[in-house]
Amino acid sequence: MAVVDYYKTLGLSKTASEKDIKKAYRKLARKYHPDLNPNDKDAELKFKEINEANEVLSNPENRKKYDQYGEHWQNSEAYEQSKRQQQQQQRAYQGQSGQAGGYSQHDFEDIFGNMFGGQASGGQRTSRFRGQDFNAELQLDLKDVYEDHKRTLTVNNKNIRITIPAGVENGQTIKIKGHGGKGTNNGPNGDLLIQFSITNTTAFKRDKDNLYATVDLDLYTALLGGDLMVDTFDGKVKLTIKPETQNGTKVKLKGKGFPKYKKAGQFGDLYITYQIKTPTKLTDKEKALFTELQKLR
Amino acid sequence: MEVIDLISITTFCTHYNVPTTFINQLEDYELIEIVVSEQDQYIKVTQINEVEKMMRLHYDLNINLEGLDAVYNLLKRVETLQSEITSLNNKLRLYED
Image (cartoon, rainbow over all chains, first blue to last red):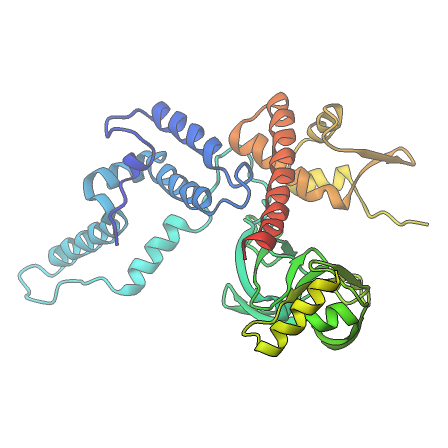
């Protein structure tokens, strides 16, 4: 793990005054505050770092320890405490040989708890604060969002079951209320914001609730008309091809597109573009017949 | 008839430990809408998230109300632009794939 230099995080030298620390923190907090940088994970991470740095350096006692022990400043407290206990024990049992009073994992935990449990933020208000919003990205396939889709997510070691409404769009964010960070001083929890990244491995292209597809049409059906089976998102349909259909002709299949978001039973349209395939590897007879046709025009 | 959920400003301010004048100032800057009913003032429950955000910006970052007005409006624009980018990206995929 990389060593965190709190001074560097705040862009300060070790000789910085309390005023300098406050000033640097405020400047960086304004730059990276999550409310001012929506959906920016880098800014969120940076904001956490500068908050951590400020919490340590703005407290003279913690800063002193940090200056003395560096990244292990929290352990130093436990070390000093155990050292003091050891010295006291040694004084109490003068001359006796014995085990030095070690410090257990519990001691560390208690100390950490004392240091980090219930810190006041900023000192301006001891008010109830809403917890931080959590951002998550969920990758789904286009097929998954054609119908309502249930998913179980693990957030803060808790499983939450969510229903993703059919028709959700790529890049769209939905909010799960109260599943974000815990509030401060009994404040409400933040929200969980899930952004969808939808991959499309189908032959259809999607624009909101409309779908687009290109289908091949043989020359003879295009010229003379006929029937053609085409794929839609939920099965096949038979289309009647008009005689003399031109290349690039578009037809709209009403209601055969993608489901409309949160509008149960409503669908967009499917647009089919015909791509006429001309025959290749003509036989001599075919060539002769086409030549004859050419002469007729 | 449409039913709107409201929260009284006094309840809201007591819960968050902020002065009621802060909410009134937000209204002065037309950042929120206050509903008056039977002489009591309320805000819409749907506005709570926005008010919380403004409280954080004001109290955590010391942004004054003039700054809040500017920041809030710019954030709205950022939001609109972001959703426009998403929509355009989705459209672009129609031609790129």
